[in-house]
Every structure is written in C-alpha cells, then in structure tokens.
Amino acid sequence: MELTQDYRALDARYYMPAFSRTMKIVRGKGARVWDAEGREYIDCVAGIAVCSTGHCHPAVVKAICDQAHDLIHCSNLYYVPHQAEFAEKIVEISGLDGGKTFFSNSGAEANEGAIKLARLATGKKKFVSFTHGFHGRTLGSLAVTHKPAIREPFEPLEPKCTFIDYGDVEALKRAVDEDTAGVFVEAIQGEAGVLPAPRGFFEEIREICEKKGALMIADEVQTGMGRTGRWFAYQHTGVAPDIITMAKGIASGFPMGALVAREGLEFKKSEHGSTFAGGPLACAAGRATVRVIEEILPSIPTKAERFAAGLAAHNPRVFGLMIGVTVGERCAEAAAYCAEHGVLVNCAADGNLRLVPPLVITDEEIDTAVGVINEALR
Image (cartoon, rainbow, N blue to C red; front, side, top):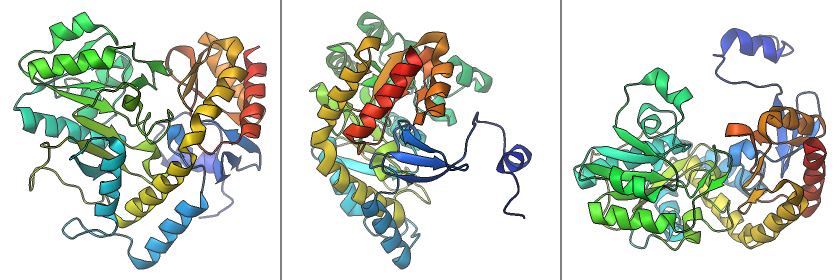
C-alpha cells in the first residue's frame, strides 16, 4: 500500500461510514493538536473528555512504554501487573468505602457490567433512566439510553427500561416499582449539552431507591476523573450511589473503563469477565493518569471561572472544565468557524456547543479559545 495514498479515499473505500469527520489529527501535545495538513488547534474536545491529562503527557507515555517493554497482555486467568494497585486507587477516589471495582474497555462496557450486577444483586429485571441521558451504544447500554434516533433501529431492547423527564421526582416515584433493579443517572448530562441535575434531585433518587430496594447507578463516564473539579460529579451532591461507572478520562486515551460498587456488591466467580479489561498497559496508563490529575485537580475551579467569565455574554453552563453554551441551529456553523480559527469545539444535542478540554489547558490557551468562540457566536 502506498503511504501517500489519500486517507479520505482509503476511509471511504474500507471503513464503514459511521462517523462524520472533516480532518485527520496526527499529533498532539498538552491541549494542542495538529492535523494532517500541519494546522495547529487548541483542543477543547479532548477526544470527548478523554484526554484528561492532555495529549501524550510525558508521565503517561513513559508508564505505557515502560510496561510495554515488560508485558503487553496478561489474561485475567492470572494476577495482572498494576491491576490490584489501580483498583485500590479507584475505590479510594470514588469515595465508596469498602467498595470493589471491575475494569472494562469502555464506558458502555462499564454500564453493561452495572446492569448485570444490579440484576444479580436485586433479583429484579427492569431499569429506570432519564430523557436525554446517554449510557452507551452496546445493546444493553443502549437499552437504558433515551435518544430515539440511536435506539429505535435496534428495538426491541433488553433490559426493559422506563424513561422519565430528567429532574421529575414525581414521575420517578411512579416509575420505580418492586421490579426495578436500578436507576441510571448522570449528575450532568454531557451528550445533551452539559445539563446539570436540579438541586436536590440526587437526594430524591437516593431516597426512592432505598424505599423500593433498587440500586442507584451514577454514570460518571463523562463527568468523572476530575472533570468537574471533584473526582466525580456526584461528590458535589453529598449523596453516595450504589454503583459508579467511569471511562473516558481514566487512562488519558488508552481504552479503559471501570465500575465501582459499594461494600457488599460484587461479582462472584464466573459471573462476569473480559479478555482485555484491566490489562497491564491500561492499568499502567490509568495509574499515571491519576497521579497527574491529583496534581492539577486544585486548579480546575480557577480554570472554570476563567471560562465562565470569558463566555459570560452567552450564559454558559460551567461545571469545572465541562462547559455548555446554547447556540441553536447555528451550532455547526459556529463549530466550523472555531476550527477554521484554530479551536476545536463540539456540537452536542439540541444546538448546544460543548467544551471538555484537557484538564492541563493553560490560562493563555483558555483566553485564546474564548476569544475565538466569542467571535464565532457573534
């Protein structure tokens, strides 16, 4: 194959057209990336909240390379290097004292695991989730994801799930019954455009779940790993879920996810498994990622304030480095303008501009990005 062959033609010929894309990113460093034509961008997408420590953070790169020299893969038939140590750290930062973790390869897989664990633990079959929520595209995680455009082609789906309006406590009370295994909820709905849960909503969910014997499952795939200024967004509420799922920023771009369950909730032998989950490279990358985030976590609120002040004219929704701006039908046009002027942003649902930059983004980069976004929204 000729290396000079046009990548667009190759993609069109050999890759299923499941994505809409206009550029090829070939290199990254910190909060900046470069495309195949050599153009430089401040990346406020970060792989959709994935590149938490920035692109190619030296500590993460070193951890992956060092581990790759020793062992790339080890089956879970054996004790895996770094796995128990990283599990200990994830349980610690989750705040679920006495809990245990299970690693996966993605957020969708983590949510699949949560579905299985909730069914095992409760003996119940059904779930409740919320409109505009997003929990993944595998059949199980899609079953608890509301978005009709991606659900309906694959129906009927299992498990059975009732969807109610985000924040509607009375509807939640009616929906959670004696056969409800769990309630899936995001503290901030990222795919919907960075929409926060109403004040007191998590407390209400917790109370309803306890009354009905259902498990409260907090999906922190996008909001976790320091994104909102705490390790997990639910920690702003003072309420502890039964299960937390996570992925995206957990290993700085190395494919990984996890679920953490409170004390007393765990898979027994042969109830769950995975060939690749929690492998040596993933756990090495994850441990390095957590160490970096520990250092920069105190700076997130200040960076959030800088974004909020810079975008104040557009009434942004700012939760740490998770930012939404309602733009409407001009969202795609605004995102394209930003890209043309060296800033990558993303359109989430319903015309909402979404920014989820690397946590290492600098003040100078924030100011530059804000300037371009303001120009685009004028």
